Structure formats: C-alpha cells, structure tokens
Amino acid sequence: MLDLLLNGFVTLFVIVDPLGLIPLFLAVTPGVDQKGRIAIAMRACLLALAILSVFALVGLSLLQTLGISLGAFRVAGGLFLFWIGFELVFERRKERHQKSADRAVAENDDIADVAAFPLAIPLIAGPGAISAVILLSGQLPSVIGKAGVIATIALALAVTFACLAVAHRIDGLLGATGRAVISRLLGVVLAALAVQFVADGAIQLFDINTAR
Image (cartoon, rainbow, N blue to C red; front, side, top):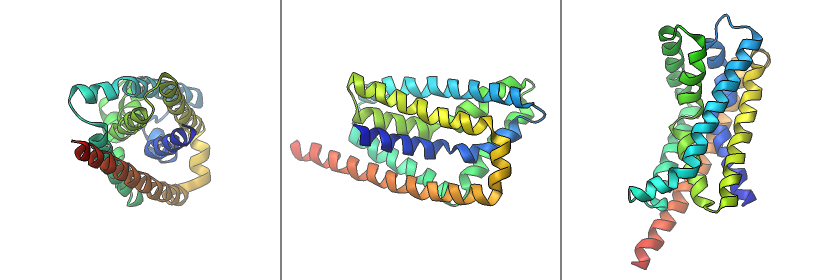
C-alpha cells in the first residue's frame, strides 16, 4: 500500500508540476501583493483538493456504472499520462497552460476568480490529475486505501501551495533554464510511470479475457 501511495504521490506531483505552475501563477496575479497571492494559492489548492477527492471517492463507481473495467481505464489513463509526460519533455504543456492563463487574465475582471479558473481547473485539478487519482483509487478500494489516497492528494497539493506561496523567490532562484530542466526530468519519470500503468492494465484485460 505504501508503495502504491508513493507512486501515486510522484505521479500526481509530476502532473500538477508546481514548479512549472510558478510563472503561470505570477502571470495571472499581476499587481497582487504577497498576502493576496498566498490567499489565491490557498483557495486554488483547496478547490483542487475538493475536486480530486470527489473523483477519488466516486470515480471508480462511475466507471463501473458506465461499464468500463479498471484494466481498460488503466490502459487509457496510462496513454493519456504518457502524452502529458511527452508534453513536459518537449515543453508543449507549458504553451497550452499559458493560453489558459492568458485567457483568464483577459476575461476575468475579479482576480479572485483566477483561483477557480485557471488555477484550480484545469492547471491543478486537470484531466491528467483526475485520471491519476481514479487509477490510484482503483488500486486501493478499501476504506483505509481511500483515506490514504486523499491524504496523498492533500500532501501533493500542500507541496503545490508551498511552491506557489513563495513563487517569486523560486522563480528568481531557478530561472527559465532551471524550470525547463526539472520539467523535462519529471516528464521522463511520468512517461515511465504511464508505461507501467498501460502494462498493468493490459495484463488485467488479458486475464479477464482468458477467464472468459
């Protein structure tokens, strides 16, 4: 169980990519003082925690209602996470998120709305993160397992909040080059985890078909 939760934390951390969020967070909070940015970061992370926790609790039941097996979702989710890893390595994800950030600044008159969009959705609790928590929740169906999944989500988002709270300092320390190197390394890690998801899902599908 601890190994699964650790893998889940790493996967979620890489998908959320707190260091990659820093320049976007600064871009969507222009003219906001440090106290205001901390408040926005806290609100965004709490909203993301609520969203991801709901999917962790009911996501698997939703799949079963739709007639989708966990094995099939592991394959599909693994392929989706692999694409995110690919985007991280080649910096395409940053461009896509930058468009969301630019649109939010242009459309939102109230800066508080930025906490919900685009920070909470889709930058933090996006499709990749939702897929990851459903996959992790499916591997830990017990009550204790679900509690562990929510704790893992909370830990990943606590790290995200810590990074956003001191975004200006980290941005100055790492610079564009440092962020790019870290994002590429995390992208490779996520791609490897995604391949494992696909392999596990394929084995499960094969076992189901063999049993039939």
